[in-house]
Image (cartoon, rainbow over all chains, first blue to last red):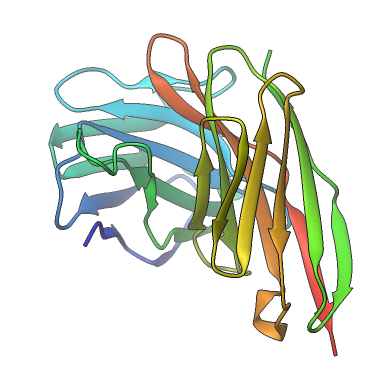
Length: 118
Length: 111
């Protein structure tokens, strides 16, 4: 149990296009999901906290108009990188915590999406 | 502010024991995670400590001292497959829960 999926697993796009990444909790409900970005040989940097039914909370320095987050249901959050540029190339990982229950202290990570912008 | 420090790299020998230290300064501290991450993959959960003390789980143990802002991950009977990055992460609550990650410690296990 407690599986999180991401789609796509990798994407290559041209500069200026927008890319949508989906994060799904497959067998549990998640009121809150988190989006991270990870550059090579660096740790995960929290970008934003995605809250079901309300606006996402962005970390300092993360442009909310560039990284659009939508959390339309208890099992799905999406991150859209708008007008992507080469510097946006990174590994994007989402995580989710089961709402309540014995596992509510544990975060389950998706497999990540590798974005390459040409 | 939020600050989590851990060594950048460590090397150990197969079959040995290694301890990876982590110090933290976080507001709204609510617990400490350790994750393992192999290159190109997502992190996998190892442990979560809320109270002071040592928690053992098979070959892996994790220790927390809240008063000292200190934690360590202990790996016993090292195997080659344990070569990975180990991420120390603090769970914080400042109006909502979130997890702040350290830079990670890359562990190399040699034969």
